[in-house]
Every structure is written in structure tokens, then in C-alpha cells.
Length: 274
Image: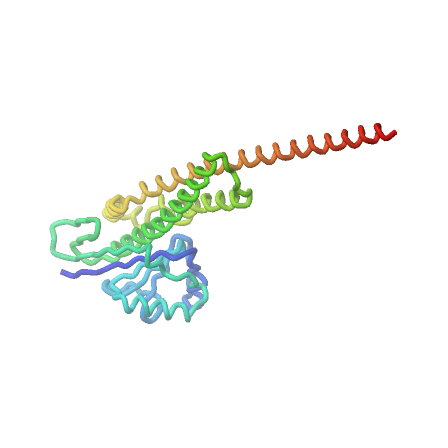
């Protein structure tokens, strides 16, 4: 039995694959959904010839997945890639990471669990699918954590509102709304949660394997939760914005009333003097 390990890391922000490819003299243009697959030791493009070859999958949406790589090789890759290109600016996260294993053994049929997939033979397409799924999972985990931070912040604001305090500047509300919209963008368009690998359209077994793996990592459910929480946060932000505008309108009305009262007082004073 051969056992292969995957290590996936989330990065803060996009990874510009085309800039990295240009820096490494890789003569290929990468689309949004295409990973850049490199040898972690030489930084050369993985040729796809050897199944067990150590490699790293880099994804535009800010994830890196290492296949069959020990920790010291992963650390070496990050040191070397940072020297080779300035496009790889964001460090890996030790907080948002996933580990998974692939076992190739003489079994009757393919088996998939939460932490391991067991295959009958070595097929690179399944390595690609596992890497793709893990990359989505760690990127989602990072988005989930940031959504929770905003939720906690909103709870503090709601508590102040419950005490009759509303002192949230419009600029902060705008930033919060932008952050929430970014969550929705990253989870739907950026991370492509609802997209499947291209190979699943051509190979039925690969499609079943990806669907099973995606279900174990609850990709669709986690996306739905992010979307629901984002919609809730946007609704709350709209309420705060409406209250803020109402407060500003009331303040302006009082200023106008005070100015009119001052003008009347000055007029009456002038009449009294005359």
C-alpha cells in the first residue's frame, strides 16, 4: 500500500499565477480556474509523468496544496518562491489549513472518508480533484472566520443600540458593507464554490468522486451558511444606515429650527431697539 499526504494552506488574498509563471519562465497563461502546479524543490512546472512526484498546486483564490511533501520541503518552497517572484507576497496561514491522505491499495472499490481516500490504482486525476477540494475548503475556512469576526462586531453595535446608543460613523458602515460583499464575492465568484473540476464533465467516476469528497467537506453547506450570514449582516447594516441617516436628518432639522429661532430673536431685538 502506498500512502500520500496532502497539506493545504490558505493565503491572505489572491495569488497572481501569471506573474509567478512569468517570473519562473513558464510559457503559459493561466485562467482563473487553472492551478499552477510546480515542483516544490526546483520551482519547475510539474510534467505530470510521475504519479508520486512531489508537487504544489497554487490557486488564484489564495490557496496552496502540497502533495507528498514533508514539512521541511514545504518551508523550503516558501523561501525559494519568495525570492523568485514578488507576486507571492502573502504568507501561508498556519491557522487555516487542511490535511488529507490518499492510499493506493488492492481494494475492491474506491472508498472516501473524512481524512482519507483509498484508491485501487494510481491515477493523477484523483490527486488533482483532492487538491482542488482541499484548496476550496481552506479558503472557505478563512472566509468563515472573518464572517464570525464581523458578526461579533455587529453584536457589540446591536448591544449599544439596545442601550439607546448609536454612534457608528457612516464610513465604518460603508467599510462593513464592503467587507460583507467581499465575503460573498470570495465564496461564490472568487473561490468558485459552485464550480466543479473540468474533468468531472468527461469522466463519470471522477464526478462521483468529487461529489463525495465535496460532501465530506460540506462545501455547498458552508457556502450556504456564509451566504445566509452575509445577507443577514447586510440587512443589519442597512438598518444601521437608515437609523444613521434618520439621526442626521433630525439633527439638521433641529439646526434649521435653531437658526430660524435665532433669526426671529434678532428680528424682535431689532424691532425692540427701533
